[in-house]
Each structure stands twice: as structure tokens, then as C-alpha cells.
Amino acid sequence: MKRNKPKYMQIIDAAVIVIAENGYHQAQVSKIAKAAGVADGTIYLYFKNKEDILVSLFEEKMGSFVERLEEEIKEVPNAADKLLHLVKLHFENLASDRYLAIVTQLELRQSNKELRYRINDVLKGYLAVIDHIVNTGMESGEFRPNLDVRLARQMIFGTIDETITSWVMNDQKYSLTQLVEPVHQLLIHGCGFSHSKQ
Image (cartoon, rainbow, N blue to C red):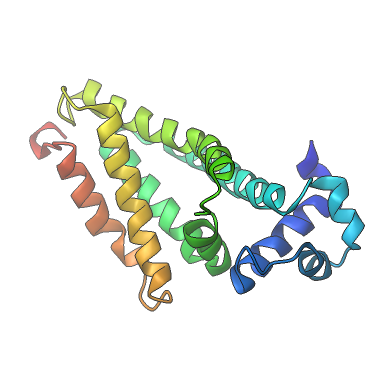
């Protein structure tokens, strides 16, 4: 597995900072190599090109986030609390790493169609967790039984994503984690959450 190779994560972590500081198009492979403390050629032992670095860093960061999320919500009994946990973890994850926030919210949004497909592929694991929460809520009676799962997923992911993007665009001037509760309230009411069924 690539992530066990010593220099792989070193390059990934350096790429997050270099891409955040310079923008994807200005982030030359040589700059990433220098920041990682490796020779330019070493990068090509792990990655095909700069696009591959961008997708791989998203795979790594999103992959480990989803693993942690799945592990932590496993023991949470109801759907509303699972959703609260998801919002909280996502906001905390990016609030604690401003470079990663810039990369995920701005630099990953490239117009290149092939790149967009690869990014969407990586997102599938995260979206599956949202689907699981929505289905759990419908089965338990917490959420409306006739919810359109796909629409609910788009609403949940879209709201979380746009809230983080606005925070990044405002130079992260305010606390993202203080928005956990209001965002969660909006989402559960959008899913038809009923307090009487708690």
C-alpha cells in the first residue's frame, strides 16, 4: 500500500501546503518536491503527474476522515446524533487544517472534467455515510418516511460544503465549529425531524 511508503505521506502533506499557498496551477512539482525534502524525480516514483498528486491527497485525507467517521458514529444510537457527529467532525477536521480547507474547498474545484470524475469517485465513501444516516432516520421514524434519499444527501452535503467554502472565502475569520449546531438544526428540520419521536 502506497501510504506505508515513507516518502508518500511526506509528499502528500507538502503538496497540501504548496497547493494551498500557490494555487493548483502555480504549484509546480519542483516546489512540492522541495517542500517535501525530496528530489523532483522521487515524486514520479509515487505519482504520475500533478493531477495525480491532487487526487491522491484528496483520497488520503478523505479516506482517513471517512474511516474515522464510520468508526465514531457506529456507536451513536440515533440518526439525528449521527448527523450531528458528521457535521462536527467535518467542521473540526477542516478548522484544524487551514491549508487542507483551502485545497478541498477551492483548489479541488478544477474545470477539468476527468479530474472532477476522479474527485467525485473519492467522495462516494462520504456520501454513502450520509445515505446510511438518512436511511437509519427513516427506518427509526426520526425522519420523514418518504424522504428522497438522493435529495436529502444533496441537501446535507451541499449545506456542509457551502458553509465551509464561505468560511474559506472569508479568510477563515470566524469560528467554523460554532456553526455546527445551527447547521445541524437546519439539516434535521429539512429531513422532517420530529422531537416527539426522540
